[in-house]
Length: 260
Ligand SMILES: [Zn+2]
Ligand SMILES: [Zn+2]
Image (tube, rainbow, N blue to C red; front, side):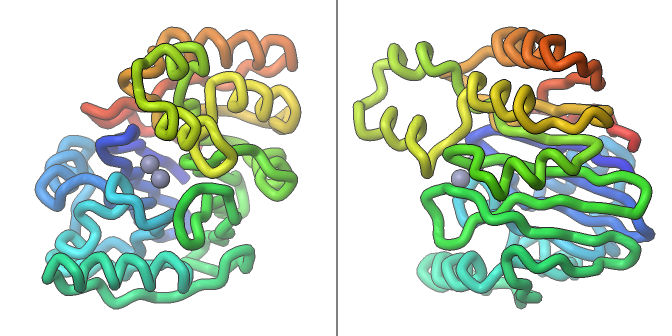
């Protein structure tokens, strides 16, 4: 299995995964054209994808979903809660919603040789999920847009050999960002985003001894710095005696492929 984080952050999220004989996207939060460009930049075809797995209906996760899915014939997978809201969003803006293949949160399903498990997370949307993908040899977790690390999330994290994990903000930078209080409270709250400290604490508490790779994701451009997030996580990993490959996902360009 291998993954390429095409884009990560509040302006758009998408990751491309190959494994178990299938090719898929997790989220399609860039415009159709940007998705095509970034896939081309990493040598992946936009055609013939086996799935687009949707985490939740926020614009930065579904911006190009309908257009890209229609243009390239990609099947779109979501739970009922997310699908219903995306359908409504499309209807309200006069666009055609993609046909959805529905799954149930918490119920693993097969996609070729991959086992996909949608993990329920806490975020301010209808039915948000994170995903784990298992090809029988390795398990990859994709955890962004979560307000806190629930027991369910902790258990799922602990079983992963590689993680894409939200490290959204530095709490002090967020508090001093000059943003209105309700927005600060939303981001830092239990239905918002994981701070650097929360991400570090989760890894220190739950990461598997076999963790081989960790990608910090969904960094706030205003309330975080890649160096700050990375240094925080490096300390947490060292304290736990882990030394996975550590990378920080970017908004503006794809990361290199991570091979598992
Ligand atoms: Zn997001
Ligand atoms: Zn979100």
